[in-house]
Length: 452
Image 1 (spheres, rainbow, N blue to C red):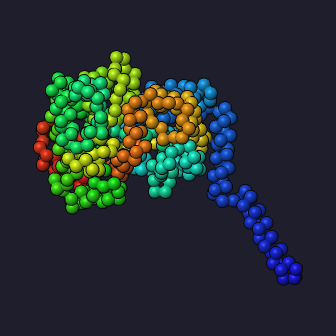
Image 2: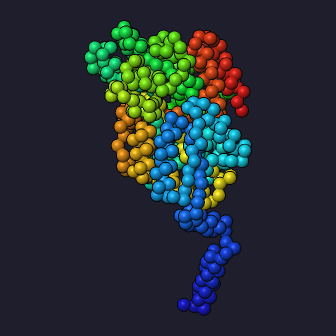
Image 3: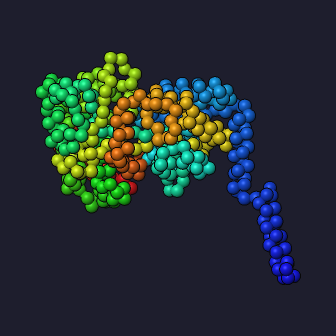
C-alpha cells in the first residue's frame, strides 16, 4: 500500500472516530436527548411512582366498560390510576374537550373521532416511535387512518360499519319465507320490502332522530358517494362550499333524500320522530318491534346485553337509486371512526409513557380485547385476536369488508366539528316536515358556505 493510500485510510478512520465521539457525547442531537428522556420516562413509569392519567371518552355508550378496564389495569400496575372523563351519548362531547383545553387541563388520553384529531393535531404527541409496532399488530391500512399530514397521531382500535340493519326473524315472518339480503339493491327493492313488512302489521323501519345519526351517518353519505375516489369527493365538497355546486342539481344527494322520504313514510317513530332515545330504539329493533334500523354495528353494545331479544341480525346497503350497479347500492359504510391520541401539551413524559403502555396493554391483552370485542361488541382492525366476537352485526359487516364492498367515508375527517350538529338540525326539520327539500338544501348550502 502506498504512503498516500495509508494516509487517506488513516484520515477516514479519524473522521469516523470523531463522528462517533460526537454522536455519543452529552451535547448530542435533539434525537439523542429525546431518546434519553424517553428511556428515563419508561424507567419512571415502571418504577412504582404514582402516575395519574385522564381518559377522555367519546364512545359514551361504553363508559362503564372502560372504567372496569382501568380497575383491572390498576390491579397489575398499582402505581397507575386512570380517571374517566365521560361524555353524553350524542351530546356536546367536543365542547367538553375544548373546555378542558381552554382551562389548561387537557386529557392525557383522548378517544376522539379522526376528524377531531386532525382538527387538534397540534395538541397531540407524534407517535412515530410507535408506528412500526402498530403496523405489525394491525390489519393493512389501519395505521394510515391515524396519520395526519405525515404524523402518526391516532392509534386505531375499532372499525365500524353502518347501513340498514335488519331483524331476520321479523323480516322473514313478514315476507313469509327466507330472506336473501342480496335481493335489495335498488330503492324499488327496498320499497317493496317495506310495503310487505307494513302489510304484515309490523312497523317497517326505525329512523333514529338524533342529529349525529341524521347529520353525520345519513346526510354526509352524499359526499362519500359522489365517487370511489376521495379526492373527487373532496373536490365536490369544495365546490359546494364555494357555491359552485348545487345540491338540488346533484343526482346522488337527490337519490339519498328520495330514499329518506321512503324511510320517513314507513318510520316506526312516525308519531314522535325526534324522540331520539338510542337505548329504546335499539331495544325495539332487537326485540322485533320494528324490522329495519338505520344504524351501525356499535348498537350491539345495547342489543347484546338485552334479555328476550332476537338473535339473528344482518345489514343491508342503503340503495339510493334504481340502478343496482350504482356506488352505494351494494356497499355498506365502513371506517375506523375512533382513534386514541396522547396529549403533548400538558402531560409529563412519564404520563405519556404510562399512557402508551396502557393503550398497548388494552389493545393486545386478552383482558383488553375481551372488553372491546366481547363487552363493547366492536370490531378491532388487529391481527391475531384472542377473543371471538359475539356481535353478529359486526360479522355481517365483515362479510362486506372481506368482499371489498364498502363505502369509504373518510371525507368526514376533513369536516369541521359542528357539521353533524348543523346538518343534523336541518335533517330534523326535514324529518318532521318543518321545511321542504328546497329549503333544506338552502340551509345545508348556507352552512357549508360559512365554513372556511
